[in-house]
Image 1 (cartoon, rainbow, N blue to C red):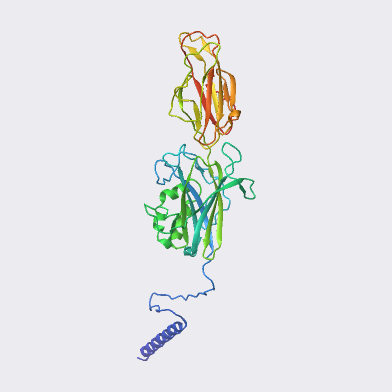
Image 2 (cartoon, helix red, strand yellow):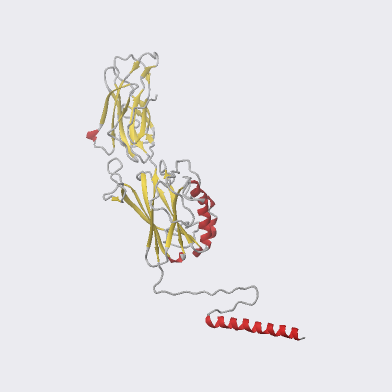
Length: 435
């Protein structure tokens, strides 16, 4: 009996001690409820409220660009493009690592060959890490295009800017704010008026998680790792990650080459966090013409007959020496300067293929060159290629092509032949070997 009484007394004393300890804690805290006895552990918390507001440090963890792989609609289609869109001359984004400043050749964008139905779209993305994404008050991109000094595609600005340590000159193109509207995206307003914010603060982490096509394209182009994708989504749900995007278009009227992209994130204290990367707009040419036939009609021996061109693109049709039909015009619908070559095959007598007319000539003038600088290629004998090296055509520019024939003691009859018009990008280069 004494032993049992002693045990009960000790138990009561222990309970009293526990309650006293609990009362002691409550007297020093501001908790609204105490941890119930049982499987519960209570941990103290502490904080110091400083002076001022906002100013949460932030990290630009990743920036990437993605092209629209479909030109047929206004929707953004992710995936592997049929153009060279992976340049991979840069480190990829890794979990928790600040973005490398100055990453180059992120992707290569190829504009449409013409702007129908739409210009080529692309998106710029940035991932920002912060203990309080709600402290982000502004996100914007500045974009510079490469400076072009000379005709036919330049100058494209009056005051180019040089960014050290590079010697490359750029023209400022635009500034685009992502935070013009932080509301969630809708089908009618997919960018929220200026950009879309994906973060826990707006409850759109679930939509970010569903963007498998976008993230798949970012990984496939070598701009980020799958581990970084998983990290972004995880941190988004923790409220420590915000993702922003803007959508732009690239036109064939724009300069080709390396574009400079600067993203700025502004916090509540007005502190800016910036990162720079570069992507490339790829050069291309596309030759177009408005004449399907060159008909010198009836020509006289030892005299010149001319089919004259002009600087007006017409509906394609035959061109005649008497001026009826179309007047030959050549157009470049690419974004790179295009050099024009011409080549004549002989006019062959249809009743005797051993009888040929071999002597031709041509004249060409690009629209940006004054008429006094027209380039003449005289004595252009059959099977010889000639390039109009002083008259490259810029983007969407046209050239006037005049063609002439010189029959020398030719036998009467009907002759057939052809003329080739070739476009080459960048420079005349070596003479073609075809045909």
